[in-house]
Image (cartoon, rainbow over all chains, first blue to last red; front, side):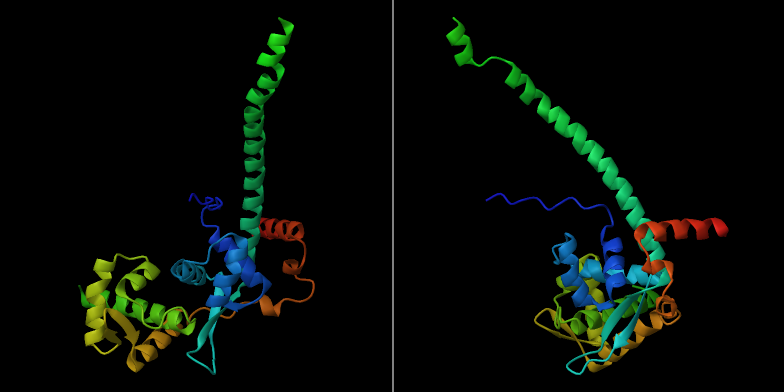
Length: 133
Length: 118
């Protein structure tokens, strides 16, 4: 059975999403993996999340520390830094600008799709032609 | 494999396995799962994992690997060491008027102003 294609997300969209989620509140990895699903990710790539968090931390956009756990190993908890918040705002601005471009594309696409429909509507149908005869 | 490369890969593998385990994602991953997690070819990672098992950092059973006590200790420590030079975020130091609490438009304007100020 054909399935719906995954929505097309901007390249590296995970980065601003993680920054946004960490702007909302500090979190550990599993929490982020769950919350990122509301932003269009399927949550099936914990490795991608791990690598993205490490890259963000190396760029000093996030910061992490061990959080002691009573039930198991200590977990890494992530927080956004001031540089991370600035990066988030830059990303949001770029995404907003991209959204305008996509809106223009869709508007022109819908015009192009509507043209044949309008042409068909303007052309008399066979029944109409037969009744004229 | 060079010794330096083996040390680098060891830290990377132990850190990733510690993180996966702590997050409850996988306690005993297969080599292919670890390779996918780290985005490296499984055939490249395989010999390293066997070596780390020989060295006592990993316990291997049925093609799956688990951190030993020694592996847990080093994985956790090397993770902390790798990011030790990073200081705590300054966000907690913001006052109530900080731009980051304002609207996105205010924040963007503030960001531009500060960029031009430098």
